[in-house]
Length: 144
Image 1 (cartoon, rainbow, N blue to C red):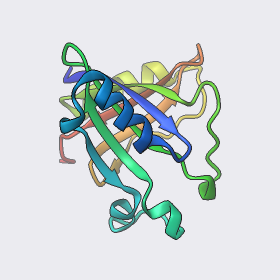
Image 2 (image 1 turned 45 degrees about the vertical axis):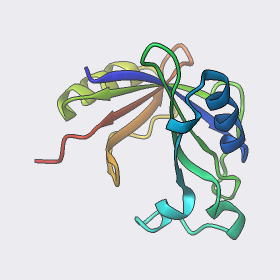
Image 3 (image 1 turned 180 degrees about the vertical axis):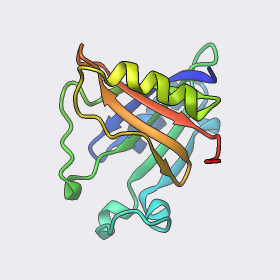
Image 4 (image 1 turned 90 degrees about the horizontal axis):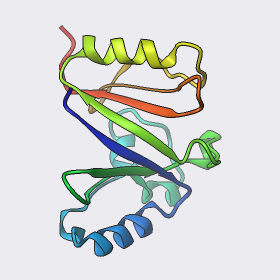
């Protein structure tokens, strides 16, 4: 398995939070941010002007090789931040087969599952397991 990180969702204040975390952990110079406007260029949803500046994806190393990632949710797409969808355990896999296997096991008996699908950054999926824990799956292996 490639690695595990923590994924955080916000409602418009992801950049503020990641700037705070970066200063706290002394890794603010390593913060990477992709804006929603950059995602819409890859076939993402139509966005309002205020949404275009929001965070589509942030990456920040913190302690011991652990990485925080996160994004702003979009109210225009019906997203609502609530306890239970604000923190997700992200797993990066070396192969699509490995991602599919873990997705199948963790989504069994769960809910809120996206299915595994090709995205601009790779192979991705998300599910909530039968215990109410959210899991995200990413793989860079290209479709064969």
